[in-house]
Each structure stands twice: as structure tokens, then as C-alpha cells.
Image (cartoon, rainbow, N blue to C red; front, side, top):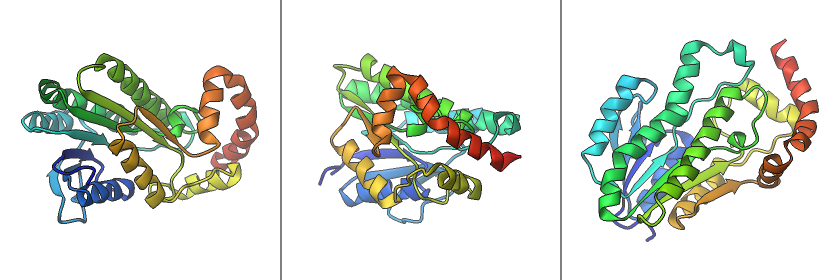
Amino acid sequence: MRFSGKRVLMTGGSGEIGARIAGAMRGEGACVTVLDRAPPADPGLSYFACDLSTAEGLEAVAAWVAQGEWDILVNVAGILHFGPFEAQTPDHLARSFMVNLIAPARLAQAVLPGMRSRRCGQIVNIGSVFGAINFAHFATYSASKAGLRGLSQALRRELSGSGVQVTHIAPRAVRTGFNTAQVMAFAKLTKTAMDEPDVVAARIVKAIAERRGEVFIGFPEALFVRINAIVPSLIDRALAPGDRRVAGLFV
């Protein structure tokens, strides 16, 4: 089994994607502890109740995490705002960056000393294609996921030769309850492809097992990521008609 005996710490392990990842890793021999506000449905998973959206909650869980020994940290938890940027409340704006970016960074700090001392470990950050192709009306989500990708790349270089691998996995849109009715309307207006959660979870587990560096899930989105990095104006023009149609959802 690919994760036999591994001690896995996972944020968002009670959600639709996280639960599938946690279940698959447990099924392959891992001892998985879920960090979430709600307990996981799977009784075979350990659970630590926490709130990653506040500084106090994050520091409390980071202190607890630092006391344990972990082989793999998987940051799955995320918060999404879809709509005009100026319509997002200050509280939701702050919580989005806390959960999507600051919590993964802080938890990585908590597990790294032990991983470094054992010269073995893996930090896995679940980002999004929306963090590499930054979409209109997803400004905060795209910005925080772009930051998570940057954190992952920087840490991977910093930890080179340490025995600790950093894996960044960026799915495209996934068909889950995470999506509001407006997000589904966006997908229809822009003909955005959505993958099934079972497929995405299986791809994520495979990338973790293979200790990959960076993985983008979905084609042609993976190609568009590369084009956007080199000639973003091409992606600007490609997205503009859809952006104008989507803007009508908020009139």
C-alpha cells in the first residue's frame, strides 16, 4: 500500500474532495487526522476541531500540530467568493486569505521542524487552476491560490536536498456543493468544464503518492496556464467575451 504507516494531517478533510482524499489514503494504510470545523463522516479518521479562519484559531491548532510527528501535510481547506470584488465583505476577504493561504503557510511551519529532523516528509498544497489563470469575479480566490502556488514553489526550492518534498496540485473546476448557483451559472455561460470529485480526488492521491512537484488537472486548462504565463494578453482576449456575459449576473 502506497501510504502504509504514514501519519497524515489534512485540512478540509470533512469536505467533498477532502473526504475522498482522506478515505483513499486511509484505505492505503495511512493514519489520517482531519483538521476541520465539522467532524468527518468516516469514523476511521482522527479529528481535531479547529477554525482556520481566525488568527486565534489558527495559532491554537498550529501549537497542537507542532507537538506531533507528521509524514504528510495536505492543505485542502478553501473559501470562495464569486462576484464583484467590491461586494466582498471585509470579514470574508480576511477569512479567505486566512484559510486559503495563511493557514497552509502556518501549518507548514508547524510540521517542518520534525520533517527536517527526520529528513523525510511531504507538504501538499491543493491550489486551483484559478490561481494560475486569474479569473474575473474570482479575485480573492485567484489571488490567494496564486499565493499558495508561489509559496509551494519557493518552499520546494528552499527544501531541496532536505528530504522534504513540496507538492502543489491545481485542479480545474470540480462539480461539488462548494459551487453556488451563481458559480454554476458562470460555468454554463463560459462553457467551463467541471470534473467529477471522484476523478479529481484520485488524481490528487496519485500525485501525492508519486511525490510530484506540480500538477495541473484538466485539459486544455493546463495548456492555458502555460500560455497565460508567457503571453497573458492572449488569455485576456480569450476570456473577455465570457467575462462580459458573466458580469450580467450581478446587474
